[in-house]
Length: 368
Image: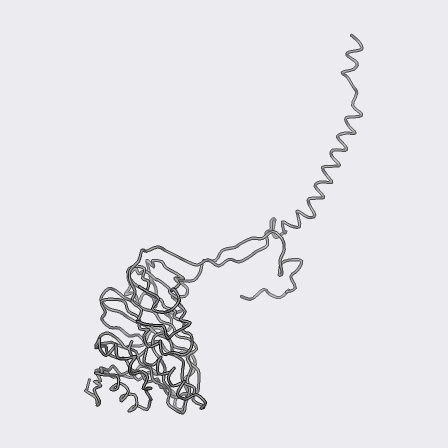
């Protein structure tokens, strides 16, 4: 988590330090930052994170979509304890999106709108919508995972991590030192990742294979502190899988977090089952905006709340019809006068018939 925030901070700092040059480092992202070499640039189009917490350990799965001309980049995430790093399932986030998707409902309107007959103009088909290192850094593990060269590090001070980055061809801005100090005081460790394309001379482009990072944690924590160094607004999107509904304890300097889905998944399948250990799980989906990232004052710490289910509803507006698609408004406009005319005709016929009928009552009185 430290590393993540460092990277975020690093990216922002590099943007400021290299203003006016051709170098364009990645912007800060929710749980980490991406650092290219001096002569290259990389941008993060999107970052997605899913967190599984069982009360004792935490697993964070992250997926990046990047662009730029960088043939390699570094990414760092601070973690509260020794981490295990593997590749994540690429199908996970699509599966979560399907589970948390909004409920679809139809909403009918009486009068025609744009797109309804007779105002529709589209007659198409309808398709649409570890060995000790130098400078106070200990390497407790290192492995190659797909496009990632992953090193798990310990560092006794922020400068030590900066030394390691510089030794591997990356620059850690000096302004990051103070932001990393809280993690140093807590004796957190780091996951440092070098992203390297698998094809020679290729650049880092598109959607990268997810990384899955697991560590022991007595509380559900998601690192955000380093994002305070970002110079642009930040957005956090987070899928949380736990035994109960989970929400942040505080906004930590951003807008109030919005819950877009909360519900229990009794029988998780596929990639979700792999993250949930094949057990029922409560899924909470959170979105949060940080228009002023400099106000971020802590990491997100999530707590158990009442298991109240919630799902957004998306309405599809449809014209009210009957009898195989006949607009009700048309029946009203055309059928109303027609029915009135028929009623009037029947009334006239009834009156005429009454006039022709003999007045039998008057004859009876005359005979008397």
